[in-house]
Amino acid sequence: MLRKHWLELVLLTAGVALLAQGAAVANPPPPPTPMACCFPDGTCQDLTPMECMHQHGHPMGPNTACANFQCPPPPPPPGPMACCFPDGTCQDLTPEACMQAHGHPMGPNTACANFQCPPPPPPPGPVACCFPDGTCQDLTPEACMQAHGHPMGPNTACANFQCPPPPPPPATVACCFPDNTCQDLTPMECMQAHGHPMGPNTACANVVCEAPPPPPTVACCFPDNTCQDLTPMECMQAHGHPMGPNTACANVVCEAPPPPPTVACCFPDGTCQDLTPRACMHQHGHPMGPNTACANIVCETPPPPPTMACCFADGTCQDLTMRACRQAHGHPMGPNTACANIVCETPPPPPTMACCFADGTCQDLTMRACRQAHGHPMGHGTTCATVTCQRPADKD
Image 1 (cartoon, rainbow, N blue to C red):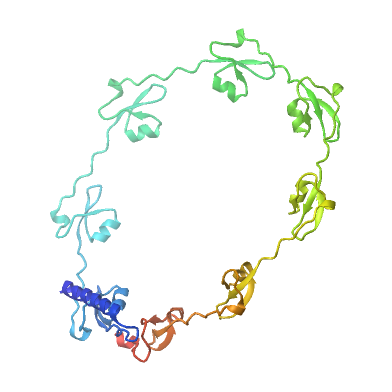
Image 2 (image 1 turned 90 degrees about the horizontal axis):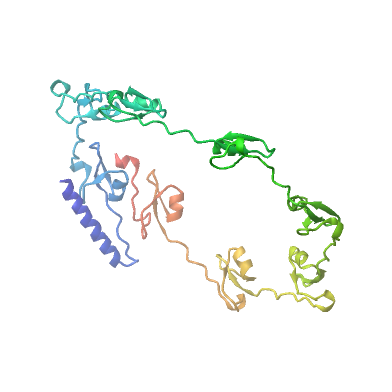
């Protein structure tokens, strides 16, 4: 019965869509008529198909009404059934209560009185458990891993299983430290102590730790033309300039580099200043190149951007630059246009339609205004004169 009504509704909807495509705007389709709408709890309301489906109901098809249609009653809730638990025990529970209690429902028409739940699996027995030091203990797999051991698998025992011996400890080597002292350590221990391992088969008994020679100094020139003999690293850390190998302050004269030359620097307003190229760009100017000066350069100001006709949403027009038009939320009409030869057109107002409210009242509003007022738009081409809004009492 439900399938038949559903097919009738689909055919009706398709027919309405085909008629709507061929209908003229002057003859809008009639508003959808209400029909019987059945809900899962067996209750019924006279609603349009769209309203019925929005409320999770099932429309019964054209020419039906709750006054002459009997909705099918809801199915009875499932009764208790046998519910088996992991420990093999059983309780008669509904499927929902069984799963909430982490049980497994055994299906309709079952009861603990005539159903045998499977017994729980036996706990695992002890197995051989090997430890990193090569020792062995008979433990359950869980106890073995908790003790940081490695279970050897089923049917194993320490009496018939040989755990692998532990790996030999790493060999020590001579480890030299910056103060020329020495200790016999593993390579890892040596590097962790900031020492230098001397390689395999070495020992402090046959190794002499020697400190590396200090790095050579060079002449280091500073911006104030002073000089100090420093290592290259010390010189750069002190913001000096190392003068290279085999140099010393006794045979080097530190000279300050000549200042960078100035050039003509043109600004957007047409003014000019003689500045270094870096200073010019820092001040948002344009350096004019080597051997230029403001005395022999004429800075030109760029022409102002052209104006064009700018139309606004209210149909008014202003001659503005493209940037100013967009900033004012206008629509630029393109180059070589002006308000003197452009007519700005205002867009047509959006159409109104019948808007039904929850209290059964109706207003002719645009779709946007209807939804903002929490109403229900009845579709294009409808008016309150041709639409009857349903009141809450009409639905009961």
